[in-house]
Image (cartoon, rainbow, N blue to C red; front, side, top):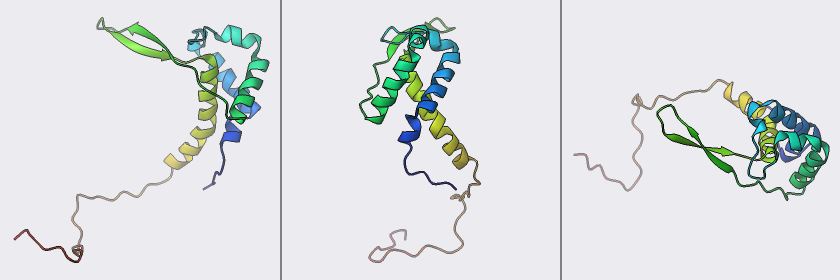
Length: 137
């Protein structure tokens, strides 16, 4: 299995940020602005500038996510469900993280797993630690 020592440089790479931007742009919810009021339409107008800034903020560890915009959507039973809407910028960073981490975790989750059935009693009793007395009678 491949070992990874540093992933942050893969997250903030410009090709990954552009790929993330494209995925966010294709999402139907991208038209909804976050707390900063910026929709994908406004972001797209200056995407090159914004993605370069995002790259530098992530690389220099100055990136700070915005607060999430809270809205309530109606449920079929008449109640309301809270929904958090991140900014476009934060959605791109989330997607960039997913682009890097998902393939790694998919490799891990597809490996065969050995399962130990703890409901079956062992064939030989475990030795008792020294100094403990049997109080079961």
